[in-house]
Image 1 (cartoon, rainbow, N blue to C red):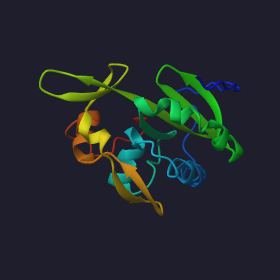
Image 2 (tube, rainbow, N blue to C red):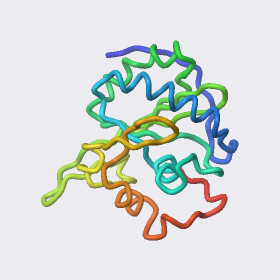
Image 3 (tube, rainbow, N blue to C red):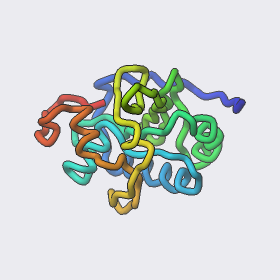
Image 4 (cartoon, one colour):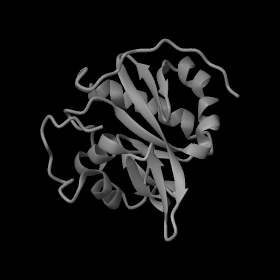
Length: 177
């Protein structure tokens, strides 16, 4: 397997508010590297919500959220040296979450596993978040901050799954994941 070492940074809820400019720079660096691969990924959680609802990062969010298909995890880990050369340092790696940081802004990468149920396939993140598999398996291009970045197809359904029927209504200071 891929071996790598990193300096752990304690990332906790409420640590700071997002710096939209640096977050956009980091996302662009991430995008330029991952787009050269066949890795299936997309915006998820608060970043997807911000992209769809506000065409920006949510003001009171803390970080950038990306999903990667679990079966691409090894391929993704092999990119860590490329990310590092571009200033995106690995600062956390636990279970199905890896965090890359540059200039005190970080990107959380979540590895979603596929599960087969009798009638449907889902993608799950540690059994906590369950999303219809096809939404994440077949991402679509979406114009966000000058990038043609991938997002789940049917993003509204994904957001409804994650945040409920009222996902369009902003909730101030409810730090989204």
